[in-house]
Amino acid sequence: MYTNKKNNNFGFTLLETIVAVAILVTAIIGPFSLASQSINAQGRAKNNLIAANLAQEGLELFRNYRANNILKMLNDANNTGNAPDYSLWLVGADACRAASGGGIDAFTYIQFPHNSSIVDLHGCASLESCTLYLNDNGVYRHNPSGIGGIPTKFHRTITIQEITINTEIKVTATVWWSDSLGTDSFSVSTHLMNW
Image (cartoon, rainbow, N blue to C red; front, side, top):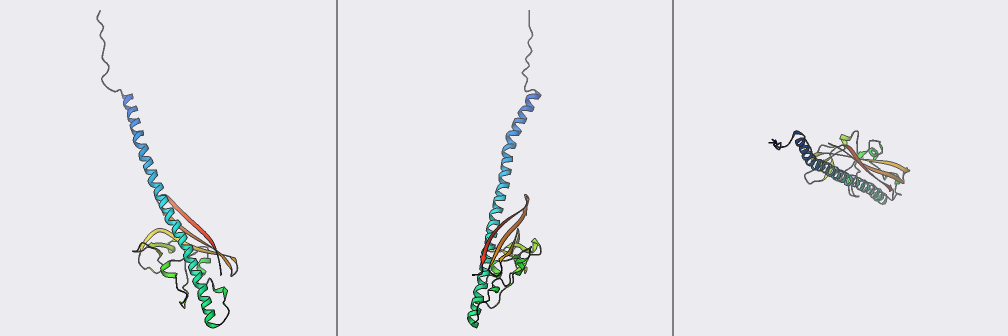
């Protein structure tokens, strides 16, 4: 008797093909997903680092502003022979007392003690009024008068809260930004005295 065996090895069945494609897709999508998450994390870390430095810079600039006011006050008292008026240590910083805060940058507000006038810090009625601009030298600054620079996604405000009248304040620098991952902020605070 002769048995006729059929050879059924013509190739992959549909089920085998679907399983193979699923394994291949999983093997490809995994690394792409990981790469995408890594790029997003890198962008968030970069923005956090820039914001932390801008917030710290805001505190340092306000510290200098306060020191210049005090030096001017002491210099004026020395020149007139009068006692120093310690209520003047925050002259020009009224905008920072508001809930919306004020803006400060090195190019506009840092003065030398021998200057006869104190520049008022500008108020931040909205985040857009405290946008930071990147100038040609790679320095971030506020642009209240519309002078040069490329607008960035970062906004910085300085707020002050009086702890002890004419003696101690709490200064908070907050940087906000928005990007494809949403809106975020970074704040840092310190206490300053009228020394």
